Image 1 (cartoon, rainbow, N blue to C red):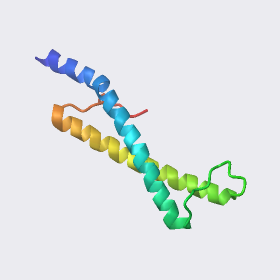
Image 2: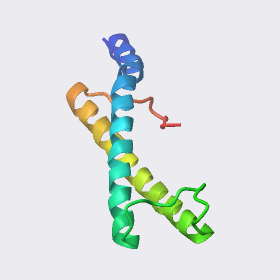
Image 3: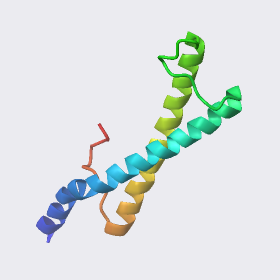
Length: 103
């Protein structure tokens, strides 16, 4: 019985890959929407500066990038964690190897 349980745990990371992909896509979409709303509140502009915007200053570009990165990291971590906990509740196994991470 212990061998069967070990095999199920070894297959879980592979089975979780499609779920992880969907969660990653979803978190990216949510983070993009959150960033757009946040930027609009901060600067009262619809469009955030891009690194290649000629008319934007360094400060604006770096501020936008820092805010976008922070929002993306928080949303991605929250969605990944919620997905992993849901998999654990439904299958009884954590979806990634014991000492593994995203990268």
